[in-house]
Length: 389
Image (tube, helix red, strand yellow):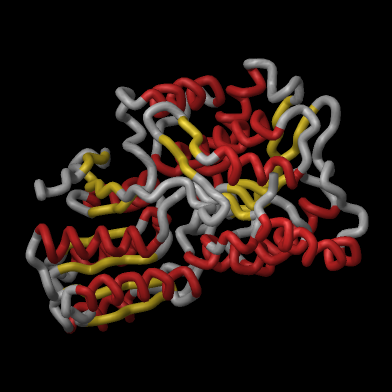
């Protein structure tokens, strides 16, 4: 049964949806043979590795389900469109996916500014919006009714940064580099809140424009303050450019990144300059096969693409894909969008094998965990153990 608040949401949106999306219905994207999901994400450009990583992980999970006979006899398929990590392009892609491709659900969108632009479209159309690759707080409001989050918030990540830098390492001169848009400002607010809790303030701020690598001015501004650490909220290409330039000018600081950066892509871009760079993660370590989920992920990844290497982004995509499949299974053979969404709120806990995602009527976020990792000399990753309490 739907909760009272979700029934109210459905009733409130019905007239709008009938007017704006007259051709859509709850069974769009569902046939006797398949269920169609749609993804609008950056597949090329400075954030392209994020969209392609999410796509690969989702496709691996779907292929795994299909090889086992599908979901209630239907194959699960994904159609992906490149939005270049630009809101206008994402709006066009989402409208096409909903109105032309007639997808059952949106899945794996990448980014805060793009999600900010497209989530209202999906909500108005009552189309599920599953597993966005962003920790932005506005997506955590369960009143939207159609958003299913997997990952922890950016606020949780930034708190983990400052706890490590100040609490574990004793550093208090902290600067920030952030992308000058909604994504970057969410990270900025999180850092400021975490510092304020400890009676601290940022010693410097630097910004850059989305989809550029123009970070020199930001570096010059930050360098003046001689920070002990620089926390960064951005995509891998501009972040890598900043770190490489910073090391060339002998800025001796800890460099800490948000999960959205794309760990493998960042490590590859940094090369020899990557050693010691810290990245917060919101999924388990992709090489720890003692976790059943990770072992299954690695097998599904190899089955999908024998040349693919494990990584944090594709693991998140796999988790999102697995969760979608489990939601479809819970919703039953006569699946509707409404029933699919209610499967998450009413089921509560989803055990993926060593990792449990928990939802409820007032909780649309499955995981809260944040893990810190560091890039090693050979470009691989190692977990940073939390200090004993």
